Image 1 (spheres, one colour):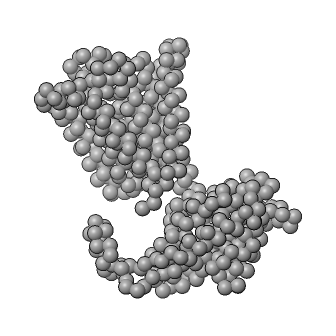
Image 2 (cartoon, one colour):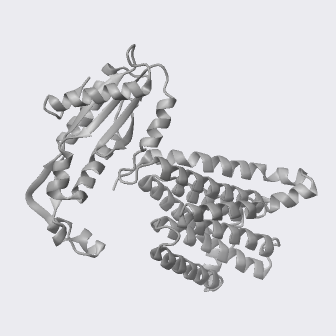
Image 3 (cartoon, helix red, strand yellow):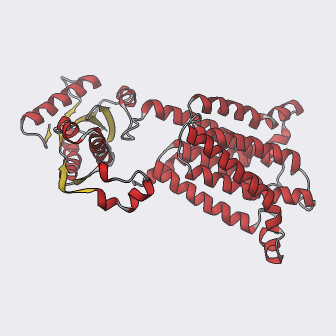
Length: 409
């Protein structure tokens, strides 16, 4: 399992949306009555757009989160616009403060299966049942004994009203969300985390004027941004390797300046892997190569070009500056020993397979993967990016003819 700390940069947009909503909440009262009515219905409008797009692009978790944002906003507007000293409002506030982290914890842990997938239907039902149980049981939990009353009572401070227990639970779920983002490296995780933080602040600062409208609008925008970005990733990212695909490469080539280098990479004897060991092993080989070239130095960006071929773009770099980073990648892949596993010995249940991981290994049967690399830079004879790609491809074939497992410039 790979960890991507750079994925946290995806939180920039949600953070900006939340900050704008939080600091802009006071300005809502300065607008005209008609404008205020429109703005107070903005979360519903954004949710409708997000729901339609999430369904269209088959994003089940974003669809479920959007439904939660709508329900959350409706509940706050209709049940929590009074003092928390009111017993009914206090019970609703406590229930919502515990449902919020529990719900998003489930979303962070669930895999994306698509809206119409049977697993998603079961997951939706399970989440709904859990949310209802927490919502109904939370008031009883907060009144179980004197310690529970103090633990789940609204915070006594003037600037913060969420209970101590709910605050700790929200902190834990936020950490889970950050880890999920770093592991999955997807915009959906950033959108979910942004919506969670926005709704958390809406409860923690509930005594502020118009805070629920402003922050639920920010949560809705996070959902809409997440759907748009995830749909973009579906079109531009390769599903097998996680690298940007051919379409993303074509867009990048249009934006390159006057100086750049392109590396074309091909897995040596890839057809032999597929013919001898099957396509599953071939896929593992491609993932291995992709995971290594993803971390290439020198400012390069890796792309899946097609089949067993990859491409790395080095903006503002000469061939000489790119030789060492590509040589390091080649050596790292060449020295990696890839152990084969016998699929017939692998248990059908994933948990059992993980426990008996070593039992499925084939003794003395390891793969050594090598790659060949061709490098070319923009020059007098190659002014067009497509021409540079073709030149790098020619260098790649030269590396193949010279024995493979080498960098040719």
